[in-house]
Amino acid sequence: MAACTPKATEDMTDNKIHLITLDPGHFHAALVQKSMYEDIDSSVHIYAPDTPDLDLHMAKIEQYNSREEKPTSWNSEIYEGNDYLEKMLEEKAGNVVVLAGSNLKKTEYIAKSVDAGFNVLADKPMAINAEDYELLKQAFATAKEKGVLLYDIMTERSEITTILQKELSQDAELFGELEVGTPENPAVTKESVHHFFKYVSGSPLIRPSWFFDTKQQGEGIVDVTTHLIDLTFWECFPETVINPEDVSLVAARRWPTVLTPSDFEKVTGQTEFPDFLQSSINEGNLETYANGEIIYTINGHHAKVSVIWNYQAPEGTGDTHYSIMRGTKANLVIKQGAEQGYKPTLYIKPVTEISDEEAQAAIDNLLSTYDGLTLEKSENGWKVVIPAKYDIGHEAHFAQVMERFIEYYKNGNMPAWEVPNMLTKYGLSTKALQMASE
Image (cartoon, rainbow, N blue to C red; front, side, top):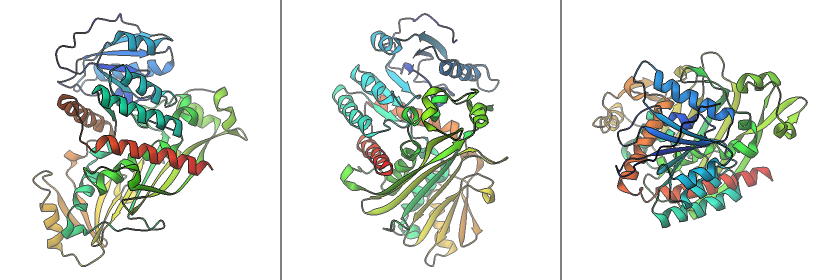
């Protein structure tokens, strides 16, 4: 059991962010604290039930505080009890609530936190079904009324190959215009492959058993796909409002990942499947609907996003990402397979005559922001060679999201496109679940 520290009355007249972590159940709740921030107070109030999830969360915070290189100095003040939500709402010990845990209650947590006047930084997904989506819409309306921020953690916008794919797609001389595409050959395709068993911050990741219950975690089609949908909006139509009428759902499907009892034990530490998973047991194995595919249009351009969850990556490999943006002059492709050493790698593949000089000119346009970029001849085009300093890793992207949130908090608002695009994104994913389940 995590140790409880008596709550100290907070002085929030310093214009700093004072964090509250509510019911942490996913390691992303800890990753936002892997770094320290000048604008965030070092004391963090944690409200949670008495569960192993809290112990796992505190172990990660302690790991960050005690590491040799750049240790953090977080002071955790914990309230542990069944009335944790009521206590948080009553005590108002901070001004920003961080949410990363079971998605069964997440939308309710969002709505109640915003209604109480808290800003909210929430891990994806904010909604896992149509009912949650309706509550989320109301939460955004309340946030606007109360003048607080409601924002989701979109780490993939910080990945360097994705950033450069976006930037190069805006270069009409190199890329041309985004193709319209078809359902069979979309203009944009993004596929993400994940693994239940992995290492995080150097240690094997122990996942809570509820992570495999789609009623609590949500199906794959409404979970990781939110990152991919977000990227299609963000890359194809930068800083542009995407309303629900700008998006049309074409097709959606889902399928399960099968885990044996030994697989389940290795990733959760539990020797038996809990009762709430019994309805998903088939011939002694667990079937969890972690995989999904969505085909849709954005402003008339076809896009496809898909997420695949395997149990464990082969030795020496890891999570992978594939992405292509098809232009009238060139395709921009991100691969992350064996050929790339499982590192995201960006390629420019011309579909019309493009000279070396024209390709180099596009890279030169980026050098003022991303120095050190070079081009290397590759099969059917060029590989964009990116200096190692930009490859900071997925975990470091959480600090970059937090820095964006801090900027929004200090400004008192977000860019005009953020909220409508979040609403459209979750409307699309939850509608896709309905279609795939029919």
